[in-house]
Length: 272
Image (cartoon, rainbow, N blue to C red):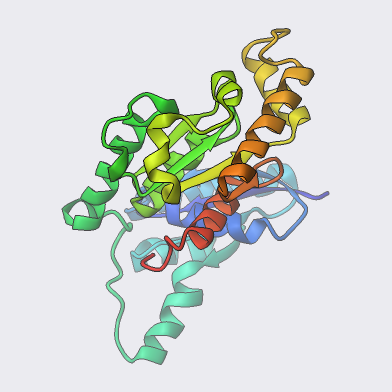
């Protein structure tokens, strides 16, 4: 596998450049050292990062890859004229052709967060994040009716990161609730969840992987033992089948894949 240094250069936070670049890099089997260079908004800063990129090219003997979302044309000119890296300019590649197609000029704003804090969508997303944090791991049963979705599953099956991702990316109020041995003994969902079955989605995981994750947290405990993990996963999946709850295994899926499946299955994604 080839090794490359990859720079993400932006006159904003660099998040867009990094997200775009990583999506492209995922198509290639390479080892990449990633360097984000945000707030490159002056010619002087541009010259500084050119020196950094060119030094990397000289030391490594291969030109770095540079993903750019620079808006300032003076800054971009410095980099295009002096940089030894392979430059992939997001605006030049995508925005300018779209300007031609649409017959209008883009906003060419520096960074995607310049005025987002004033929007209703931003405030809704912050409210969703606060809601999800308050309803993490069954901390509160209050206002479960306000949930857009309730995730259930055994401990460490991926409920918390998925809840927060749904809140942060989509503004969904996501609660999550752990299934515990007492629920399995009763052979039914926790009473607090029963009125909201239509909002429930289940997450499961292969017992072997679950045991690995739990051993990182509580080594050599009954909680982390493979036998216990097998038992809990079996009981949880059996319960979800009995209750008619949709569920998926998180074992080999990314957060993005999990969230996309949930949005589709729960018909929550039409507005996003």
